Image (cartoon, rainbow, N blue to C red; front, side):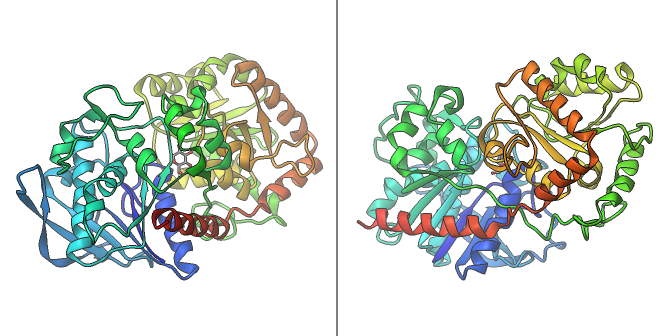
Length: 478
Ligand code: GLC
């Protein structure tokens, strides 16, 4: 199949969150299955063209904007650095900026990107069998293909798949952007859209041939008001087209046997070598070098989704235990300020680095004893999978991808610690279970080995996507 994977960020070119890792791993795995996959994203200014061998595709091509048929000339570039042909759309006004997201005109920027993708495939004759868009940034594609595109012989055959990586970000904007995108006809409001507004996440859900989220559990959860962020009525209406496919993990990019960021490399047979990484991590976080004290790590964005408030609320009780905690991440200023106080409030026990630092993250995966991921909700989550592969036992809230990837040690073949409900007491009670197991080194090692043996490679996910693409094609051409 010819698949065009449309996304706002993709590793290694532009990375804000887990979406970028998926946009790297999945296309490669699909190519390994023999499909002709290409990726397309905006060329942000921060992308270093020479590092990835970006070459311009000439000549620049016109992208129609507005209803009058006026056009902006846009450049396209290509890189083969990842083994998957990756196209970039360059427009100085919309993408000549330092960050990927966070601008007041983000909805317009991504509508423009989508409009450019549609013009690109026509201009360069790159029509895919399946157009696979991700998150609200690509929602316009699905509306356009379902309206204007349906009357056009070039676009009509394209089947579509929309992947939701997070219900919390929806891209709600005024409906003037419809005209900007060149949608002439009257477009009826969706039941979940406020009058005069468009919700781009909802448009992807409403118009794609098939929709999926990044874990089976999250696909169920978002049908409920607690996790649907207001879109549950629409999701329920489309439930027969809604699937859950767990993300994979790139086994080469995350391998404790060869990771150069580790102080000591190891495998399931040399777990004692993790002690060296623990020492290096303690040093890096200004913690006393004590092997016998359990080292807990939190790596991730300091936002509500990730359970930052739960950690802050339970801090006194948490540090009343004999533990060390290392926190690595950036996020909401309020949370950053609160975590920044931890080292002075809990001296010798808390180490905090308000940074996005992949090498330090790897050291924590390879040296921490327990990996904390108390997310309030988690569509899939990558940290818990990496932690298992590196022998740091995950302690997670029983939601979404966390529930789908971590089995509590009270079950047969347990790989970590799972708590519910989302409350301080449940979190602390589960932490106490972890600390009790930690005092039994043989039992702890056995769980570590089991966690490290889990197979989260992309191959199984890629086969599930292959299946989803086939269904989308069948639904598109009944
Ligand atoms: C979003 C979700 C996360 C998921 C990632 C990739 O960042 O919050 O759970 O792992 O997308 O799908």
